[in-house]
Image (cartoon, rainbow, N blue to C red; front, side):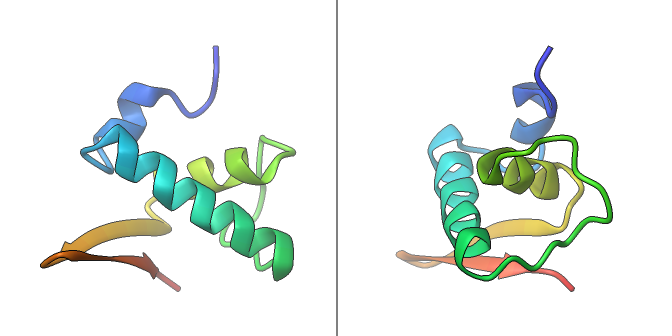
Length: 74
């Protein structure tokens, strides 16, 4: 079974498209500037790490009108 599950991730972000966009943006950011938001990750890949951060409520997505914004809580 994959961790985190799609069901648990869909409770954090309501759209699969938004979930993929946020995870991809964070994964690219982690490749350039590795700044971990969690103490320990299960995944070795950046996309998996980004999904773990979303599941742990360290990474959020909100829409502001017609433009989307990535919000990383510290």
